[in-house]
Amino acid sequence: MNRPVAARCWVEISRRALLENFRAVRRATGDGIEVAAVVKADAYGHGAVPMARWLEEAGARWFAVSSVEEGVTLREAGIRARILVMAGVLSYEEEALAPYRLTPALHSLGDLERMDRLAAAAGRPLDFHLKLDTGMSRLGLPASEGKLLEALAGLRAARMEGLMSHFASSADYASLQTDHQVEVFQTVAAALERAGWRPPLRHLASSNALAYGRREAWHTMVRPGHVLYGYVSPARGEAPPAILSVSPVLQWRARILLTKDLPEGALIGYGGTFRAPRPMRIAVVAAGYADGVPHRLSNKGRVLAGGKPAPIVGTVSMDLTTIDISRSPELQAGDAVTLLGEEGDARLDAQQMARQAGTISYNILCGIRERVRRIYVD
Ligand SMILES: *Cc1c(COP(=O)(O)O)cnc(C)c1O
Image 1 (cartoon, rainbow, N blue to C red):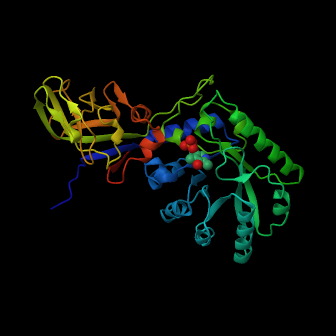
Image 2 (cartoon, protein in one colour; image 1 turned 90 degrees about the horizontal axis):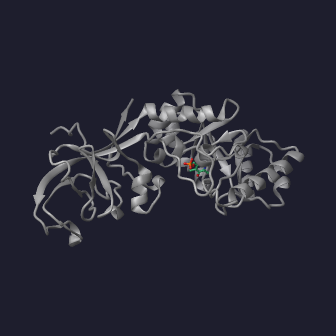
Image 3 (cartoon, rainbow, N blue to C red; image 1 turned 180 degrees about the vertical axis):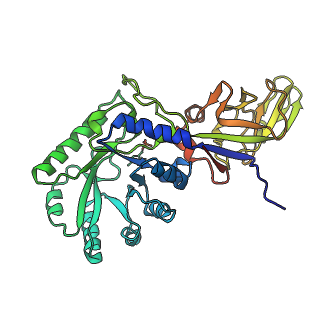
């Protein structure tokens, strides 16, 4: 038997949308600022290799990933742009840095020493970006570290190409945390400069600091992820209007397996958590939590069916979700419904789904599982 051509649950990923978002970022930053496209976590579920290929063709010169392993995947797929590994290099991962031309972000004085030894032993320079912890208390060298200058002065083969940090609350205009982080970053950068260190790539901004125009955080490089995939997080407080207009790159669909008419009082799904309040027509859809549909959408979420919102009724199960299609009774087995995306004038995006599921859009996108077929379209 041949494998079926069509999928029962798939995402369509649009090259045009990705590149328009990328161009919107480049227009906003202008030519003087480098853009490192963040393609970690399989490009937030979109597929790191295809996204990096499209972006590289469109002129991307830098990518950012979380791990050495993600960097190696890009190199093995033929990506030639620079690759920044943001989330640390464990000792058993070090030896892949040079052969795969990966640029690590370093997070401690110990990292500096270790990378310098590695570079010296390999007999070639190694560029790194030093990450400062400017107040998020996660990765990065504490900005208060007094021995930094001494450590830098002791380097023989490792070269500081970049100085970076990361914001904890950059869409929160009700908080001063971001301003504080910018200030701390600038203080350290100025101290380094007085001592003769001025790494050419200085970067703090990811999507939010970009989208809300915090230009004082852009320096010479920005690291957008979320906006490239078409999302700007909602801001808190008195935020300026977003300066970027982007649209979702991914649409998520699944097919109806069966439709049926239920009498009033019928219990739907595991646990009988939904009782039909009236006679209703439902569809059983081929997508469940094993595909990434949040279980918390049980009796809460909705999809688009026949161009109209169709509420999820009953619990989301592993492979199946039941929806109320009383408003679109013409739908039949084999027809597709939309979990994320557009049908006519109706649209549903990952932020709406996230709100209903009590999570964030990043989590929805990264949660679309591998068995959901990726279909790449222009
Ligand atoms: C994920 C990540 C980014 C990108 O963040 P977005 O909000 O998706 O733009 C940038 N920098 C670091 C260090 C990250 O971990």
